[in-house]
Image 1 (cartoon, rainbow, N blue to C red):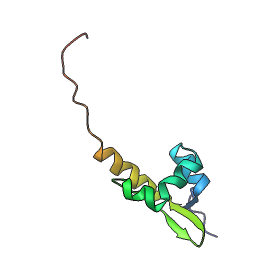
Image 2: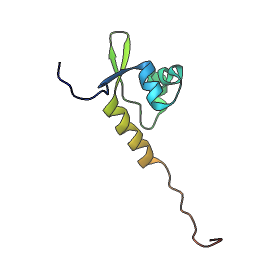
Image 3: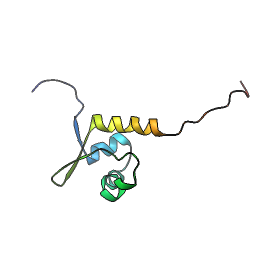
Image 4: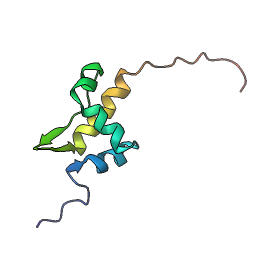
Length: 81
């Protein structure tokens, strides 16, 4: 076995939820078809039989897309220094 990195390429539901800082039940709900239809940018996942898996790289890209799509707050300069 080659010694690449300690990070896993494919994460299970629990590992992905931990990476995202949410409960596994919340992540599972985001993968359901009904929830995906309501999401502007659906969470990327794979179904291997009954198992739900997530590519770490895809989750990181998904987070970046959410950040890019989020409205930015323009701070007005001036005020106390």
